[in-house]
Structures are given as C-alpha cells and as structure tokens.
Image (cartoon, rainbow, N blue to C red):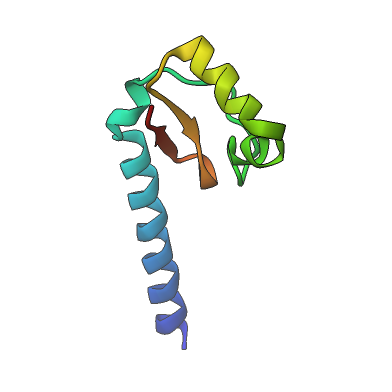
Length: 82
C-alpha cells in the first residue's frame, strides 16, 4: 500500500517539476507584457474576460506594442498575436 502512495507522490512531484521547468524555459518570457503576475490561478485572463470591449488588451497593446505576452492559467506565459 505504501509503495503505491509513494509512486503516486513521486509521479505528481515529477509532473510539477517538469511544469515549473518548462514554464521557466519559455522563450515567451523575454517578450514585453504586464509585469504584475495577475490572479494566482487565472493570470491576466480574469482582467481580459471582465473588461468591457477589450479595454485591457487595448491598453496593453498601446503600452507594449503589437506583440506581447500575458499570464494565463497557473502563471504560464501566453502570446497575444497582433
């Protein structure tokens, strides 16, 4: 029984480690974008969903240019194309 629990914990620890490593190695981290991390789980998606008439995206586009990144679920960088 303990072997199964140990295997389960090792598996999820490895998945979490891979997720953190992959997120830290993303080339999108070099693109400009909002410096705040946004919501812990939703990133900047919460601001984008509840803003009227795309005002958040327009403000970021005016500030950072046509190519920039925002934080998506769990803080992963997401590219917003022009």
